Image 1 (cartoon, rainbow, N blue to C red):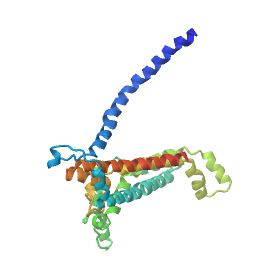
Image 2: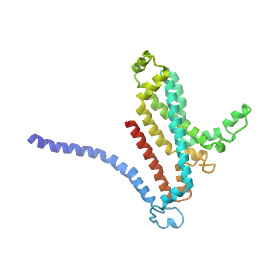
Image 3: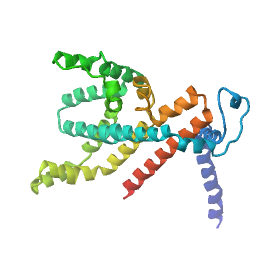
Image 4: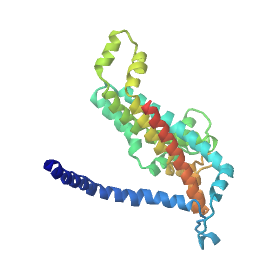
Length: 296
């Protein structure tokens, strides 16, 4: 009994020691994460503004911002543009292209992997605004792509006005594919060669090995990568804003662009924070979907 009584205070001291080490991290989370979220939720129920009568006095307006948001046709088009941009550039573009590059680089010699990896990584390490300016110069009316078309006798195309969503999707694919490539490269290197060799002995084709052995083996990595690139793509702002500004019209206005315009162009911060919470809600729903898919 005495040994048990002596062990109890030691156990409590050990627990408090762990708590002391966690306190700085918890404090940082509260100040820089939890508090801004709570403040954003509060402001979304107010008429907070930078100019006008609303800027003089902060008033609680209840669900008015949310009612206005769901009645605004631009919000619906922004949600649609966000989903198109997300599926085209992240779910399909970066995910598929990154996997294909990683698969093609598998079992290749070291120098080949270094050269291809460096080329692909160049887009990822480039700052977003620099990437946007490079792609704007490429797709511009007098840009590189039209110069190439003219050299082969084709007429020029106003890419940023004719198919603006396609141009920003391609820009984001070029900018972010390297992340998926690195993730899949590490996952494919961890696939045991014995399993693939056994499949070859059993007479499986390369396609069957890929679809029935390799992909099922790295399915958790695929879903994790998809969740990460989805959340990253949901918040893309500078790339689209620098290339098209959300235009022409609202054809490339995603939720981050629309939120910025309402909060810092129209100075309606209360309405802008309500839109930001809608974006947060979409991210949470997609994250829960991916987590549930991984469990299944």
